[in-house]
Amino acid sequence: MELLPRLTARSVAGAVRLAGAGQASSMPGKVVNRLFPGYLAAHARRLTEGFAVVTGTNGKTTTANMAARALADAGRDLVHNSEGANLMSGIATAFARRPEARFALLEIDEAIVPAALDALGRPRVVVLANLFRDQLDRYGEVDRLAAGWLAALRPLTGTVLVANADDPIVAWVARESGCLTVFFGVDVRDGRAEREVSDVTICPRCSTMLEYTSRWLSQLGDYRCPSCGFARPPRDLEARGLRTVAGHAEAELAAGELRLRVPGLYNVYNALAALALTRRLGVEPAAALASFAAYQPVFGRWSRVRRDGLTVQVNLVKNPAGMNQTLRALGEVEGAKTLLFVLNDNIADGRDISWIWDADIEELLPAAELVVTTGTRRHEMALRLSYAGVPDERLETVSSVADGLALAAAQGAAEVYLLPTYTALKEVRATLAGWEVVHQ
Image 1 (cartoon, one colour):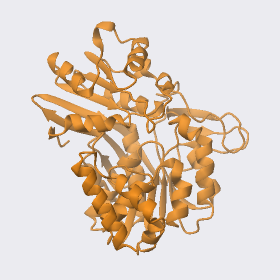
Image 2 (image 1 turned 120 degrees about the horizontal axis):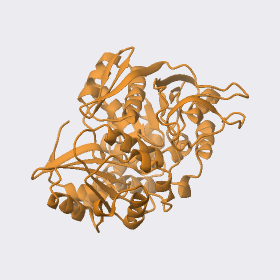
Image 3 (image 1 turned 30 degrees about the vertical axis):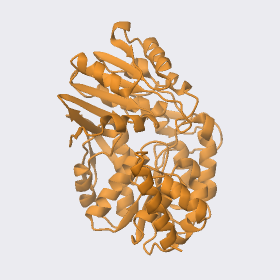
């Protein structure tokens, strides 16, 4: 049963690469799942050390890759869908690539958690990172996803949750699930994002309006319900003293100092989730923190490349919360900037692009010498930036990523921050193929 699916996946992957059609992280699994419907369940049963799951709206890929780095550094043998192919097809592809691995670390799309756990069985650990509005035309509101999570988690006995205490809907799911939970969070309390659009405004238990003493990222903050007493739970793992040093995020933990090679509050959250996960899997915190300090971002998550004096830093943006945090992180980076936005509306992005109007671009857009838009909805992105106050003489619209980079180079830019939506990453990857990777 195992050999034929693996050979099938290998053949399909070879054909995909030969055709230059991508990384072959999804199509092999699609074919295998269609031809061998029981493959996922059968392979999951062969994992003698079980599996762990990372899910949520933002940060899944970075969290899972940080954790995978720490596990690998500790000598653990694992299979991991590292490219972010987080549907059933991506999981099947990963299994077929590493058939002998005893443990699996699986990034799973937030909308398919019930179906995935039904197929795979009981995980050892599940990371619940966050729930933000994303692709409303496909996923609906966050409470719908939360209900699916809760229904999938309640029957699990022995599974440990690693949950974001600062997200009220995630904390509610964790508490209602009955699972043993390790809560993580940050100590910010400076009110710096109190006007930011929130994706959760009412108590998930009784529907009363939540009250915040401080709120720092969408609905993430220090909250309580004045009616039923539901409140932010105590954190088992908390980051304090958050700061940005030379474009890198740092924070203080009880286990030691967290140093990352990427900026942003949300990357601190990613690291906290990865630290709690790896600790449950037997990696000492000091060792995990050392791994995180050396961790290089994967493509599209603050990855950097360089050619002919032009450096390009790429970070995926796909919803208001992610856009806000990316712009806030860029505002903390010194030096002249050129921004290149790539807005697509393909199926995997979500056809509805109205989310760009919910992002706090007016307040958070950093000063830039040039702002360029491209993608299938480049004109709408340009309009949004114009309303945000970008002067016409600094705002340009082009037909491709390559044209945008050429324009930036022609105007003497040294550093371009490229912010694509999900499907735009394919064009970005093709455009930057062969550029020198810059280790941070």
